[in-house]
Length: 253
Ligand code: NDP
Ligand code: 8X3
Image 1 (cartoon, rainbow, N blue to C red):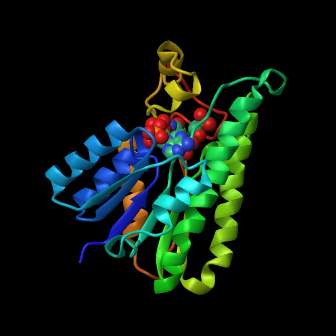
Image 2 (cartoon, protein in one colour; image 1 turned 45 degrees about the vertical axis):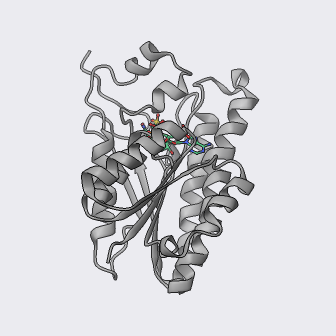
């Protein structure tokens, strides 16, 4: 029988690569995002390429009514979720605190923290019902150490780290694994979003070193899920070899 993975934010970057990886392993996929065209086109590609079943749900994780409407009462054949990947998220701006935009702060906190909570709250009952499941929360090295002008983005990822630890305790009686997967710099649409469409600035982020790629994170998520039932990776920090932590990089130019 096919297993089921639910991945938020599957229209680009990590989420898209994770969906491809699981589909290639014969898993049926529930994929979500706001950009409907991209999401549905990607769903068709997965169906065609891997002959798996795909449910594509367009909603904004910031709105709990939309989350509940889409995930609260899934069709019976989709309720048996084995793995939830809480991936949807973003950074907006790279400003010192005094120059930061309250609108950007609200968006990051609403997406990275509250959105993750809403989705998890909607999905956990399916896992509790079968006393089994695995939640992978995509945190960040920014949730381990703060860096200059990272302020609210870092805070949102520290929250993901704390929520992951706390979920692991509270879900222990239900045999639900919780993994915090915490990547360093990775070349996705992340910087384009952070710098609000400034592609030069986005590109500069990865100048002079080889960053992580989305496929690296997909391989790691797959590994975490492939371990035997008695083994759980709780906290996994991964960077490219040019990065030691959220602050220290070696750039060759
Ligand atoms: P991308 O920008 O490529 O992907 C982000 C995904 O999140 C998109 O699919 C986007 O879909 C979705 N998303 C964003 N906001 C919302 C929302 N309000 N509701 C629903 N979906 C949303 O970036 P990454 O793949 O890099 O980012 C994925 C996660 O990884 C994020 O949580 C990010 O913080 C984290 N991360 C990224 C790192 C990096 O360097 N790239 C390093 C460490 C962590 P859509 O726009 O269609 O809604
Ligand atoms: C994304 C990585 O270093 O830009 O979480 O914060 S970083």
